[in-house]
Length: 454
Figure: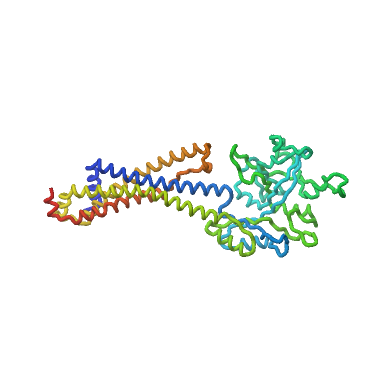
């Protein structure tokens, strides 16, 4: 018997018993929908958490620090320098290594002043931070001179140098255009504060030189109620800043840099941090261990993320198991339907055997009918799952403002293509497995006994 003949016979046999077939299919629909929706909730929650982690920084990034000195001395301390940058960059699975230099500077505009948190990095590294630009652009390696990029909240820390009044006292932002107004920068903060000391308190200090630094851009202010990373920082290209600092602090110690025992500056520049970009999340722990064994402090989110992923895996397994119970009940329904079908078609089976029909064809006929039930139930169950998923996401998004802790623009229910395809195959397999024993019973029926059966 040809495959198309078996296909036609199995579909027509199911159609003859419409009510029973519909009820059995309904069980498969509920089972498939339960599994898919339950797993989609686990996947959606896991994906939302990963998006939340990514919003706070790269998942494959390692931050390297100088080792902590418990006795407070700088003796034999391991510094972060260009040699270390080159060593880490040569490691396998390391994509990029970025040095970071942090220091304070004073910004002056008219009567206003601000204590800037200056963060110098390679222009490429700043671009990889994902900062949204509201005006201007991020610092570029192609810039001819040093430029600053301001976080959107930097303006809030400007205050009147004489009265101390600013945004935090008055609730009003100072009248400063961070992009276009001439903002002067004072790098020698120690000399500045010493020059501000009242007369009669020690030898007067000459005020340090002020530098007019052009703004490259300003960070985009997020919608009310939302927060953007790096909003308090002032960024600049480290390759432009270091030469300027060497000119400004010629033969003097640059603020934030260590000095020799005699108080003189080192010839080389040391960094506050080194950012290491690893190719894959699975390799982060290994690279972090290698750096730690070199004697440096290294931090990443890898261990925390792996722990959360395991927890979410358990949650998905539990949710999937709950849904699988429904499909197991549906499988019992399919087995019952096929057994009833065999009892009702005993004479038909006997005639087929007497006419010389191959036993494998009889088995295939009943397996195909069971598979049909699983396939139809799987298709309808998937459609129902997508509908439920849409409703869940709409309800969840509408409840975000009511206190639900959900990441913005994330779906609490997520059905990937692989889950849809796997659930459909699983439904068909469950149907065929449920129909296997009834099919064996049909094969073992005696032809003469089946023909004489009333």
